[in-house]
Each structure stands twice: as C-alpha cells, then as structure tokens.
Amino acid sequence: MNNQFIHRRTKLAENLQSGIAVIPTAKEVIRNKDAHFPYRFDSYFHYLTGFGEPESVIVIIGGKTPSSILFCRGKNKEKEIWNGFRHGPEAAKNLLHCDEAYSIDEIDQILPQLIENKDTIYTPLGIDVSWDQQIMGWLNQTRSRVREGIAAPEGLIDVRGMLDEMRLFKDPSELDTMRQAAKISAEAHVLAMTATKPGKYEYAIEAEFLYHFKKNGSQFPAYTSIVAGGKNACVLHYIENNAVLNDGDLLLIDAGCELNGYASDITRTFPVNGKFSGPQKAIYELVLAAQSAAIDATSAGNSWQAPHDAATKVLAQGFIDLKLCHGSLDKVLENREYFRYYMHRTGHWLGMDVHDVGNYKIDGEWRALEPGMALTIEPGCYISSAPDIPEQFWNIGIRIEDDAVVRKDKGCEIITSGAPKTISDIESLMSN
Ligand code: GLY
Ligand code: MN
Ligand code: MN
Image 1 (cartoon, rainbow, N blue to C red):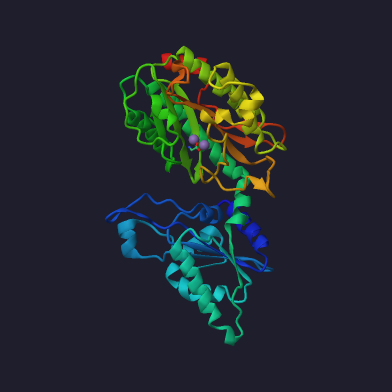
Image 2 (spheres, rainbow, N blue to C red):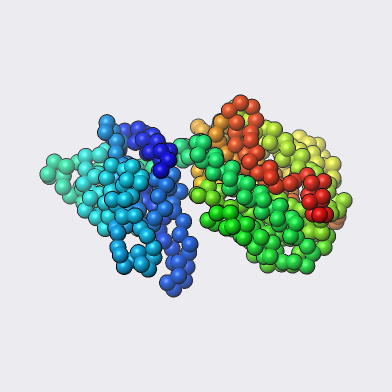
C-alpha cells in the first residue's frame, strides 16, 4: 500500500493535538426490498485509509504518541461465501499499517475506553442521525465513569473542517488518478460525438459513456450524466436523458467518470447533425472565449473569483453585441443582467467528490488559488424562448467544462483537453 494514507493520518494526528478523531465509512444503502445500491465508501474515510470495505471506522489518536486504530468486519466463512472476501482485522491492520485493529462488533466496548481522558472528539457531525447517536452513547458511557477518575471529552468538533483543507490540496498520487479519470472521460466524449446522429435517443448516447467508463476500470459515473438535446440543455440539472435527438439541435453532455475514488467532470456541446448553425456558432464562440478567459485567469495567486469575473465579463459583452442584453458593459455587469443567460458559477473544487470539499472564502474574502488545487472551469449560456429575445437564439443551451490543476508556477494544467472543443475540431471529428 502506498504510504500517502499513513502520511495523511500523521498529519491529521498532528492537528488533533490531544483530541481523537473517529471517522466511519459510508453505510450500505437499500435500493428496494433487499437489493442494495452499488456500494461507495465515504470520501473522508477513504482519504485516510484507502480501505473499501463497508462497516469500517478509523480512529486516529493525536498527541505525543499518535496512533491509528481500525474497526472492520470480522472474518466470516459463511458471509464470505455469499458476499465475497473480507480482510478481517488482522489482515486489514497489516494492509493499512494501523497500530491496532478490531472487529466492528467490538466497537461499543472499545470506543468508550479510547475516548477516556481525551479533551475533544473530532467526528463528522450532523450527516447521519444514527452516527450522531452512537457518538453520544459512547460519550455518555465514558461520562458515567467520572467517579473512577476518568474524564470524558468536553469538546465535540466536526472533523470535516480539518480534512477539507487537507483534501483541497491534491498530492501527486491523487493528481495521477485524476488525470487518468479525466482521460477516460475525455475519450468518452469523443466517442459520443462520433456516435451522435439525428433520430437517436439521449439515453443511447449516455450508454456510450457508461460503457467506456466501465470498460476502462472506472467504478461509477462521478455523478448522473446530463445528456440534453435541444431545449433540454436549458434545464441545468436535466437527467431524464430520454428524448429523441433532432436534426438542427445542439446536444449538451455533462458526464465524467469516477476512478478509484476521484471524479472527473466534463461538459461538451455539439450539433446533433455535426454542423453548427450560424446562431449556434455565435453563442458557442462566445462561451468558448469566456472559458478561455477564465482559464487564463486560473493561476496561483489569483483570487478564486478571478476566473468567474473573467468569464462573466466576456459573456456580458457578448450578450450586448448579440442584442441579448442592452446598455453598457458596466451596467450589465453591475445589475447582473447577464444572469438571465448565465446563472451559475464558473467552477467548483474537484476531487474525491465532484463538488469537492474546501472553503472558497477565508475570513469573508475569496481565497487565493494555490498550486495543487483542482477545479472546474465551466461557463455556459442558456437562452429560453421569450418575446424580447431574438428568435434565432431560442432554446440554445451551451456549456463548456474542463478540469484544471493550479500549477506551481504560472497558469494551470487542463487535464481534460482530450475532448475537442473548437468548432473546427468538433465538426471535423463528426464529419469522419
Ligand atoms: N457535473 C456537475 C457540475 O458540472 O457541476
Ligand atoms: Mn462541474
Ligand atoms: Mn459538469
């Protein structure tokens, strides 16, 4: 096992000082009757362990002699026949380089002892009621022993604050995985462009993604794919993906795979018949120019807000030029008149979660971009039909989304560039 997990646990232990962190993985979730959703571990737990089995908890003790203690499923011959291999505490302890490991069945006895005389428990709070109750139960068990001279923790702090800040800065192993996930997703977008024809259905194009993701080792899509033909592209979170694709319409696809716990997130928009119309071209070129300005603004030392401001400025001027907005650039920006067509932000952190963790502001100010941060750059334009809007632009929805990593020096690395996005590249790919 790569030691980045040990490194992360050590770093967390340093931050804990005389506290103790208790972090469970995700629960298995029933889909219906006795069928489960495919299992996906908790991102925080996995960040610290790399361990994929459900019913696991990692305990990290801070202080002078930091240590890691794992609780996981015990070996069980019968259950392994039905549901497959489980490591059991002994093997898991060696695999993860933990100091101790126990069966999860023992946690109610052992955990109250582990928190004895610690000043603070750090744990995810308010996500899962039954976990909150379990923590309270262990805390009360320890409290009930005060007459034996045992002190119960007085502090209960959400551990996510510390971990979010760690997760925001990607290490080389994380970046390798993210590049690989981005590559698979970009290839799938190429396949989708070549597979799209008028008369096909959105779900048939979605299937190209699912097939390519799985075939290349991705475990899941990182989020439900958006495959939105024509006016469906103006519904930002459209996921029905069940309409026919019409000649003359655009197709917006926002789809990315998850690989070994890391998300990719790409949007491309292209013509169903392979040729952009004049009005489609005008809006597309505008969104592409906005994205290019945002990419240029994505550089260490710039504010998180800089790419958004750069994209918004280009879009606002374009809306004025195309008579979608009226008046001066300053007025359109100040009154947020562009918001009618561009109503979302230009990006978000990207990592284990597609909308990844990490604060965007520090002390009320947008934070500065720093090397190793990963984010999306995804301006768009969504025009519904309305009497005051030139009819040639009705129902055009375009977004162009890439994944970027802030470089050490100037600028950013675009890790999704395998998916074509200039009009000439898209048209030439689709004509072959
Ligand atoms: N796919 C989700 C997003 O672009 O934010
Ligand atoms: Mn995104
Ligand atoms: Mn997206």
